[in-house]
Length: 320
Figure (cartoon, one colour):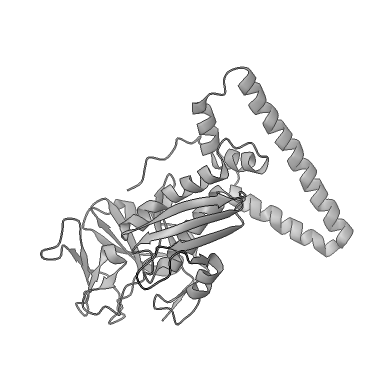
């Protein structure tokens, strides 16, 4: 489902949580404002000077490695693959990959999720290293979960790989009933995402959670687990993994003990989930679309497998 991750150096025992450290720095900077404008400015200057100092040291290290002939492509790739080193290289303008290359790499990481629902995303280009222009293809264009897919998978991946990107614009593939070339700002999709009238339901405060048990599923396996305080329905079709909110769209009962079977006459690899309570059938590969009532569907969740394991974006609430 995903390409083998780049080899990464194992952090030393007792190493700090990098994300928690970054959040703590932000919190301390915000707290410094309580001491007045001068205290805030001095704190920010202190952080800036320390950052510049370590940035200069990192640049010096890379220069020494380069002049000694030891900074080959393999070593540079290993440095860029490390999350902490990569982030520092980006901050100080030392990253070997361009912003556009890093955006494309981020999209490669989320393509397995989009592909599992018959969709894809195309990078149209990056303008001034600040604006990423994308095009959603296939069933992602207009499907009930496309806005959730964008905010929880595509946008998160881009922000992590290329924090320089200030805006993401999404162009939907032209259809006979639509004018070609329409550009939908990400803010527009966010407004749909939080609109309770949206057929996919409102998703708020979504966070990524590691779900180790999903990778333990055998082909055809179904499981219900709890993550982020929500019950999730997990299943595997061949090598592909899927996650949904554990709730039948027709009877609203749990899908625990649901059956996963190939639809009669369907192509190899297609699979249908059967609700154990009311018998409703859902097409797994079509984002949980109900085969018995086209107006119903399960609530699909972004699921990404990387070097850390399988992670699912779990919404804080789902309104219908």
